[in-house]
Length: 259
Image 1 (cartoon, rainbow, N blue to C red):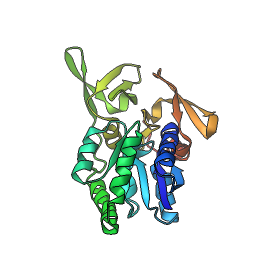
Image 2: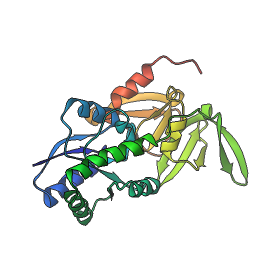
Image 3: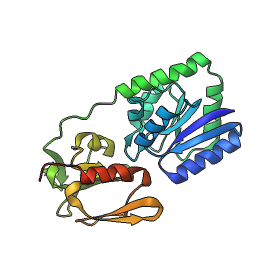
């Protein structure tokens, strides 16, 4: 029996992945399904290394590469992703396998067959390759004072301290200010998360980065999750997943300089 770990913060995607595994490889045993970088790091430090890891690239509390910066991974990793073309190019170069969401049975069978053909030495080498790729993730840099945004035929600065939230949908990222005005940005949400100061901005889930000063109300929701109301209108309900709640509470209650 091969022991498998799934790191995926979307419940539907995790259920689908387990169902496909049950069809393609019933001999595999899923030891745990984890939802965040923090939870995964803790689990991997406290349990024996699994023999295979399925890992979503973008988790609620950051990109999954951060796991490799905190734990030595010696198991082969099969990444799952919905759209990240740039990451896919990097994976191809580093010979790391990946599956595009929604995951098809044929793709799963291909990935598992590729894994079976690898020797033990080659499987161990997967972890080293991923670790090398993780080290290439740029560190959090100095926060810019403003981002340049286009408004009709003009380009204007959007000051960082004016941003209420950033939101992504259909691979497009929008930043909205405290007056409710919204502007398209030419950066991914992951790139923004790396630039914005952690003491003032929080990655609430896969769709939203929020400003501390924009938070108006916090309510407990189903499944130990939280819903947030901001001081400006939102395009959809803003839910903090269960795995992110402890970190969100620490962020909200941490000492920070007045704005």
